[in-house]
Length: 318
Ligand SMILES: Cc1cc2nc3c(=O)[nH]c(=O)nc-3n(C[C@H](O)[C@H](O)[C@H](O)COP(=O)(O)O)c2cc1C
Image 1 (tube, helix red, strand yellow):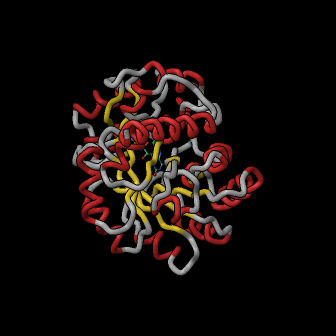
Image 2: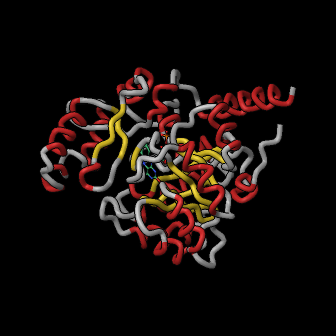
Image 3: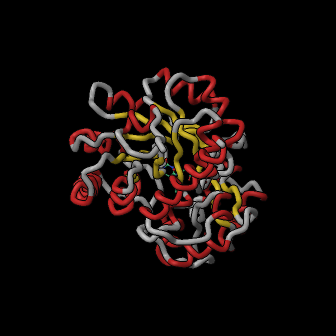
């Protein structure tokens, strides 16, 4: 079955499946595995300490795959010098750059004129229109179900995806709550031309994360994630644990950023990712965790999604 869309064409990939930027989880190994399996893998730039580390990571990915992959920039976070990192990605001729977490103009202007495809992750229709105006080649639209940072409007993927597809002419990639062939076909039906998945890719063999984090995803029910950081205008979805309960307590008291910063820091995030202690840190995950039940290789996962999508398409055509 052909799943060719404007997204597969734009990104020069076999299947319209993109691995989302995953802070402190998406390094060369995962990116290469996704790209080798026919999707688009991404290295998350802001997880790396400096531009030269990014250069090394891009070169490491190239030793593992000759397929296209992307570099993701979550700007406005971590206080890192993203301009220098974008320049490294340009020098290393990465085929795709994605940007989120703030006004994408700075990054898009730097890439302008280079042969690099520009993806912008948005969480509202207005942001999608803006991204198109600024020259994005495609938008990824994340709904409220998703893991990590979300829009402030609490709008789910079933509303956002078709709304954005109606308002922009560039291809739309649906993100948030997708784990399988059903999600892929639903996204295509809603007007998207590809999907981006985050949480699903954490629960794979290739992702380097503590087994407790992966197990917590496997064990999670649909009510086992919480939105933290809402009180500081940056809502983001994480697995519910002792640490996030404490964060929510502080937020209830409207104590402000200074009281929160230690608890919501990249350090607390990394501590959980690497050590898996739910009393000492947090891990981002979407409601999609409830629908994740195994730890396949990336190749097995992507092949399974395609087979499921094919079965649905067959069923529809009978
Ligand atoms: C652990 C984790 C870290 C994330 N970090 C980033 C990031 O650095 N940059 C980014 O663009 N998106 C980030 N996201 C969002 C994902 O790219 C994607 O939009 C989201 O996971 C989609 O929802 P899903 O988890 O239901 O698939 C992150 C998501 C998770 C779960």
